[in-house]
Length: 113
Length: 115
Image (cartoon, rainbow over all chains, first blue to last red; front, side, top):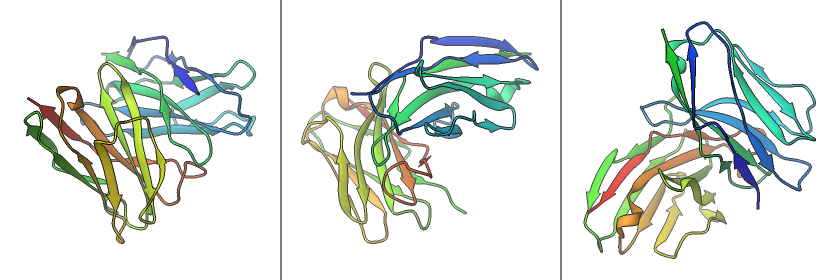
């Protein structure tokens, strides 16, 4: 079974600074997808960024980027120019094509003024 | 474009009762998945429906069931509720089955409390 590990239960960053959230996963598959989801107090899971394992180029979405290290099975999320609205739980997730999302336990991000 | 709609938002039930939760996917999406979120177990996959057929199922007891209608709306049913069923139940929709090129769009969930 695939497992996703987020080793940082809580992280804190100052507004306008950069923060990196860590995620490692375990799989024997070569084709898969990785995601970062954000869950604010409103409870809705919001897709932040996704990465296909066959793509070597790291995905980027505005202030959000990932560092995908396939051999190391690592998938970290970098948030640049942090904003107060970035405060939320962040979940790393893994999925094979056609199968369900496997989520990590989450990292709570606090953004301070 | 309307998002994924889950009703009700909050629900309180008594142990032993049954409950039905509803999920309306984004228009045009044919896949609906259900997840249970608890502080202890985190997010766990319940099942996925595509074109009215269950495609995948997580490791939950038979008390948890679901169905999908021809308009892609889905319902999840939990019978003989236990205290441990208290959780946030999230629904997610996707244009096609599986994650592939689209990923999932989630609703805001139904908070179920069993007393």
